[in-house]
Length: 318
Image 1 (tube, rainbow, N blue to C red):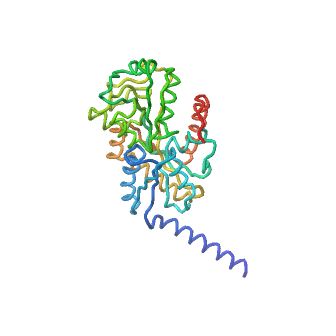
Image 2: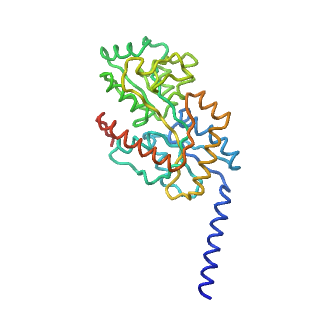
Image 3: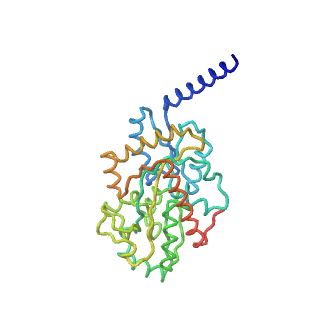
C-alpha cells in the first residue's frame, strides 16, 4: 500500500514537471545584452528576439546592461533564476576573454549553460573618413612617429583584444580608450575622438557604407563579401592576424535542458530562415545554430585560446 502511494506520488510529480516544461514559455522571456544599444551584440539580440517572440508565442524583451567589459550583464544572468525566462546574448568578451583577463570575476564558466551560437563575424580596422590614413601601412608609419589612440567597445571585448594583437604584430604603441559598448565607440570615432578602432564589422558597417568611416582591413582569413575591396590583414601586410568575433545565447546554470533544447531549436530555425540569414550575411556574418553540447565545447576552446593571447600581451585587469 505504502509503495503504491509512493509510486503514485512520483508519477504525479513527473506528470506535473512534464506539464510545466510543455507549458514553457507562459510569460515573457528576457534576453540580457551586456553592452550598450547599437553594437553587434544588441543588433543581433534584437533581430533574433523579434523572431523568437513569434516562434515561442511569447514576448521576448531585450534588456541592455552595459559596463565593465560585459561583466555587469553576465553577472546578472549568472545570478538569475534558472527557470528558462532569462538568457544572455553572450559574446567572446564576457564568456571567453574575461576569464583570463580579470584577476577576479563575479561569475565563472560553470554559472552558465551554453545554448547555441547565433552569429560569427570578422572585425574591421576603421578610421574616420576625414583622417589622413588611406592604408594600414599609413597608420603603422604614423604610429611609429607620433602618439595615436585606439578606441574599443570595452576592456576585454574582441575589438580591444584585436587592437592589442594588432599592436603586437606591428610593433606600434597606441593608448587604449574604452567605451561602454560599440555604439558609443562608433559615435566617438565619428567625432574623431581617437585615431582608429578594430570593431566588430556589423556595428561599423553602416558608417563605412555611408562614407563616414574608411575601412583599412578585415581580420578574416578571406575578404568579406560585403566589403570586397577591403583587404585582409595579411594582404595589408599584417601576418597572423585572423580574429573572429562570436555571439550566442547562454542560460543560467541548471536551466532545464528541455527548455535549453527548445530555445536552441527555435533559434537555429530562425537564423537559417531566409530573412534573418540574409540579414546576417548583409552584416558580414555567418549564422550558427550549434547544439548546446557543441557550443559548450566551442566556448571552452575559445577560453583556452584567448588565455594564451592575454598572457602574451601581458594584460591583467583588477
